[in-house]
Length: 231
Image (cartoon, rainbow, N blue to C red; front, side):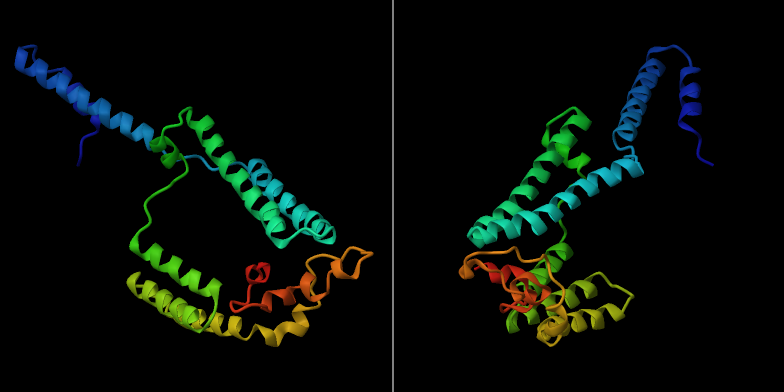
């Protein structure tokens, strides 16, 4: 049975006092101190409490709900372009969240070094499988015959590379692609689910149609997603 490190320390300290044993004791104590410091540095981070979790996720959710359901329609009714609305409602808040994460990690660790921030934010270099999944997701989001084919092939290759035992995932990916490509069949149902209620407008050119404010707008474009309607 392995001896505890503390018993080993007592054993070394109880040895004689000649020069060789003194040097052995010092080297052993130094190595133990380094090992103990490493364990303390890599101690697991305690999870946040329910209140902190609700605050961290609830405030951004409420902010995006306000932006999408109030600010966005108001800007569109006033004639703002999709380019400005997209950056104001999505890019700007996400950038603020990114900066807030960096500031919070720096305050928590009391350091702004890149190594400390990477450890606190749990950042690591993506492996080969992660990049394959990224390519599959890009093809799925972009849409089109070749992009969808890339999404299926890349995701199947990633599953094979991960040696997954859940074979049903291969069929689930193919079904998801087919559902996305035939989303127009669900347009009558999706058209009844609105993102927001159109605001009253005096100019007919600035009126928001039902299709532009409902889930049916997701069926537009070669990829069948909302971002294709912003061009």
